[in-house]
Length: 325
Image 1: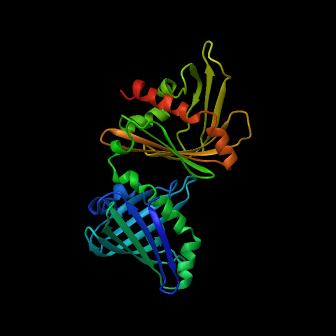
Image 2: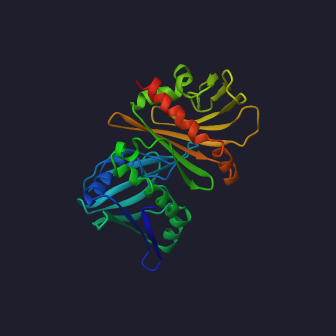
Image 3: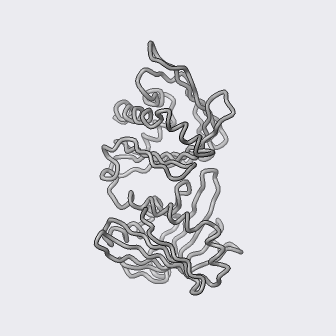
């Protein structure tokens, strides 16, 4: 976990977060100075950022929005008041509405990010200054500490080339907490084609099969929020097992970047999971990230124990062999 310390100082009206990264100062600076890289980590898992404006000059503005898995929105704006590349920048940080105007009742703060070299790479020191104890307490109560820790945990992947980070490592599982896991797989193909592979019934029937010996018997796609989908499988020949299927509703569709759906076994009342799939392309390869939200830890453990990750790896390997060619 990159975040090594969090210091709340009511006397000086500051909140300081320290984080260490195994990359040189110039590389960490580049991640903060490029909106496309910032979008990969500025926002906790399940709340990715989209920067709609980014003028990285003194007096310039950066505006972004975070969209949660159920379509919730939160927007912010930075005004750059000091920049000393590659070691420091300072902004006025505000919560804003869809028109970019400050939201009444939400605190603004002055945020200073400093990057200094260490023996292992870079230490980032982020200090936010508040106008009052009440403003500091309000931001802490909103979960900014937990959100920042979760967001910073994504930066290590950004600081590496995508192929160095994930190529040849198969389908990887990371347990984030009792109700969330993150599953990643790098596939050799462009994002647009990977998106089609997830949303074209003809292509899905080629790869989304799990272990060998199964066929997809039903594939109904949801292409817009509010639509429902149904997928079903059955064993072929002498393959052991019983037919089964999943169904759910699309909550968020941002082609070709992100789709969020609910999921439960067909013909049951649950348990229901929330599946948040995002795609990121770099150098002709696409990182598939699936963030799954479970109702509780017991359900998480039960589902993971079914061999889910092995089945996903077999499917992704089949996607590369049969679709991304």
